[in-house]
Length: 268
Image (cartoon, rainbow, N blue to C red; front, side):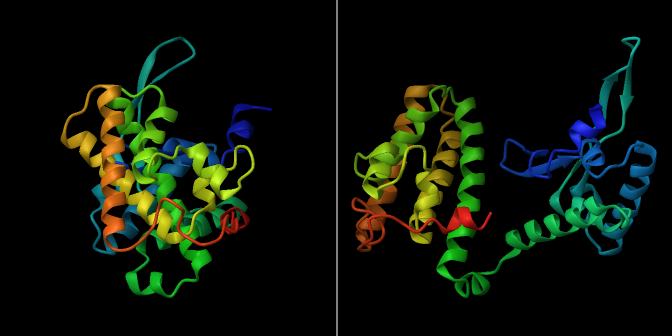
């Protein structure tokens, strides 16, 4: 299997990157391979068409197509500068729209980036009209992204033991319960993700804990693992208190049932 064939097994999720601010992006050079363009010259032509479409929509091209030139090593060890871009989700969508429609992967890209863009644009009115299962799926996706961003910030704050760090947050929010304690209370099997077994309200509470912890780590310029764990615990505790003040009982879960239906995994 050659390098091109090997890289083509990657999905659009596999090549997605997230910057220090939690913003997702794709490198054009990596997207080129996944979209089955062997020559950069041809793919760059598609990028130019996409940039023009962006401009014609009165959208700032430079916010969605960010230059990211880099050095590349040749066979003789000589280094040359090559063009590349950091692409937003919208930029990737425009590229897919202007790509070779004969390629099956182009149609997949159009669908993928259209759906991802739609998820981000969902309005409050649209959210309220979703079923509970749909809300859970939507909130689970947000918590997954939130945890990824929190991990990047926590790492910069000195965190090495991420299990302990995340359990500190759970202990604060769940009155001393760790992730394992929560899993046992919900009746989950070994290695089942507790976040995959939460209702939309519970996921929203955890997302709030996650986002507020990340903000506080940044704002307070936390630089030690001990302080990061304490911060996560205190944020979780304050979120718990705020919810308790409006009548929710998070110590015993968010529903009367022992275990949430696992609809999230079925919707993959």
